[in-house]
Image 1 (cartoon, rainbow, N blue to C red):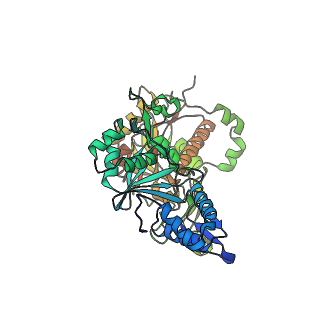
Image 2: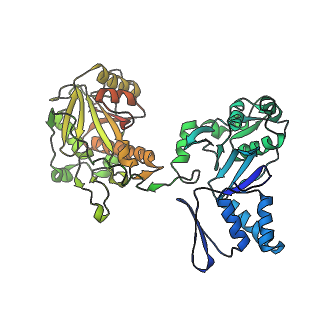
Image 3: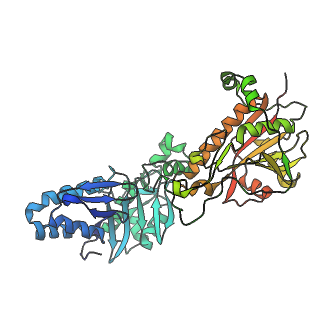
Length: 479
């Protein structure tokens, strides 16, 4: 670290790479940002080197400018320093003795840190959206409300966070942590306040979040998921980064057979259907959830047509890295991000003509059902779970459980992998609705289900493949 006697230092973000171009241009770039700068003096070049290799206080950096460029260099120095801050490139660290207490790391341009004067007699409380996680060997404080994260480098910084689970003043914090000077504590709390990690409360311990009708209606995990699967409130790479290329082999487009007990399903004549099927507009207008079922059981033939029209593999394209195709892809009746098609279909059969009750897996490559088990305690629990979710009096004829092979998508996509999976689940829901409507069946999509139940019933690893959607299917009762 750059030698100085100050307790507050500035540094460049560690993920930035700095390269020199033609005509004295310098590039700052990371996985998500790229900036070009011109006109750096010798002093500013030395300042940039120090900012990159550990940092220094503003006073110490000013001394370098004075030595290298003279007083005439100060306007340019402060111009670039402020520009770096505005672009979110500068980290701010407060020290406790020789050690770093905490570091404020911005990641959104336009949200640079501004020093905030705190009232030492006021009370502050931790936001319910703030959370601590491990990143490498560091403890990091983050929030989906924030445009920065804070590295808790010293145990006393973590202790402050723990104490602020209840509203407390700076004076109270100092009573518990006497090694923290008022100045150091004010700096650190300024980080927290500016980042939105803490809020000032009134003397009734009411904080602004509790008055905010919009924030009241956000669950912690929903807001975090929204922030991390969109750009703007994190600095992680987004999109098809192929981060596991040459490290982990991608999953195949379709699963290996799960059972030797396989039933070939009926394949409809698609040309004939294209001539005789309901008009598309009528299907769209008539689509709705139907929860009343005919006494006549849905047949294996109907189920075969339904699955063929919804989810079969129409074309399979094998990987060809030399041609830029890094993994197997397939085309199916419904769209899928990157043609990964990570979704798997399991069917819990309660009543279906020509099919025994039990749990089945649909193999879309061969259009067959693979029987995994008969009606067991777990499969009956799956049916009951769907019945309860749909508000049915009896068990549904067939419950369809949509699982995702998560790594099939995560191998290519970063930050948005789970977001894509849920979008793909939604379009499969719609495809199932439209096909069921065209076939005059009774479809119902469900809002939630028990992923662990399917894992137990089908012998799946929860972290490798588990349920992301449920759907009920039967014959429609004619009124």
